[in-house]
Each structure stands twice: as C-alpha cells, then as structure tokens.
Image (cartoon, rainbow, N blue to C red; front, top):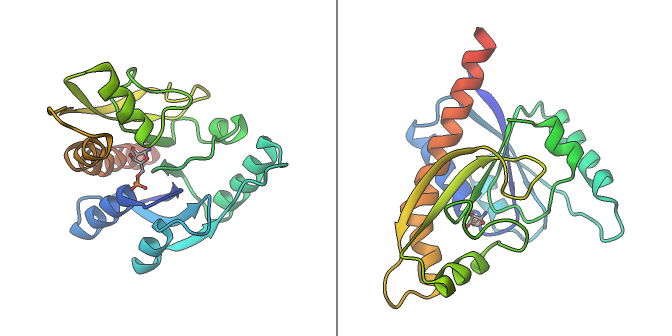
Length: 203
Ligand code: GRF
C-alpha cells in the first residue's frame, strides 16, 4: 500500500531528486510520488519530475492574490490528485492556514539548520548558513518537521548534525548540509511517515 504524495518545490530540486533516487532504489516503498507542484515555471525541479515521469503543475501566487485564495487553488489541485501527504522541498511560498489545517500532520518540511537555531521568518536558502557562520557555531545540520501555522515551528521528526569547518563559506556549508544531512534525512523520514499512515489506515 502506498501514500499519494505531492512534492512542492521552487528551485533546483536536489531534495526532490534524493527522494526520486531513493524511490528508484526501493527504499521508499510506501510513497507514491503522484505530483510535483512548482511555485515558478522555471524551477529546475520540474525537469527532474518530468524525467521521472511524474505529473507536474505550476501554481504561482499572484501578487494581488489573497493568501487564502492561493491556498484554495492549491487545495483544489491536491484534492483533484487525491494527495494524502505533502512534502515541502525548498518551496518558498508561505502557505496559508487553510492548507496547513487541511494537511495537519500530513505536511512535511525540510529546513537546513538544527531547529530552533536559525529558523523562522526570513531564514531560507543561503541566509540560514550565513547566519550560522556569523554566529560561529561549530555544528549545524538539518531538520525535518511537520508543518503547522508557525514558520519552522511544527513537531520535529528528525535531525542530523553536520560539522562546520574552518574556512567554510555559506555555499560550501550549504552543500555539506545537503550531502551529509538533507538528502539522507528527507527520504528516510518521508518514508517513515508514509509507512505509519498506511499502518493507521489498516488499523
Ligand atoms: C534546501 O536547503 C532545503 O533545506 C530548503 O531549501 C533548499 C532546497 O534545495 N528548504 P533544493 O531545491 O532541494 O535543491
């Protein structure tokens, strides 16, 4: 039994790729990657999805659009595909409450730090690693968590520490956090959540 899963992306999609590779390798048996939704048409993640023969959609939030209206459009799309589990893998549009509520404990995010350090509003992409280096921490990492109404505030599912090395630039640190933490942690945790969902279904 599998769980119909949508991955929401905005950029390069290396975390999406890590999950697609894991699926191909047979380590995500409970996950059915049904749909990839991008917040922008030029997200390279879309190419990765197409190459893996996964359905794609682009859903851009218009500047004048109310957050809840965007959320409603997204929910319609997810419902139309029967999506049960949502993974945010570098998705940069803040999701409104109607979406968060609809996917309570069924929406997962990956954040490139050890929450509660360097997280919350404004901490995304390279900024997270810049802040870690500026503070001089010796250990950083990645966190996979459920999404709730607080930015990076949902229940923590898994964390993986990564060493900061002398001379690290934000770019070098970002890459190490991805290689040593994100790409391992996200597929493993999404599979664990999906496995639990199928278990609960049959209980
Ligand atoms: C990752 O660092 C992830 O932790 C963060 O956004 C980045 C996405 O990178 N949420 P990619 O698109 O998966 O390559």
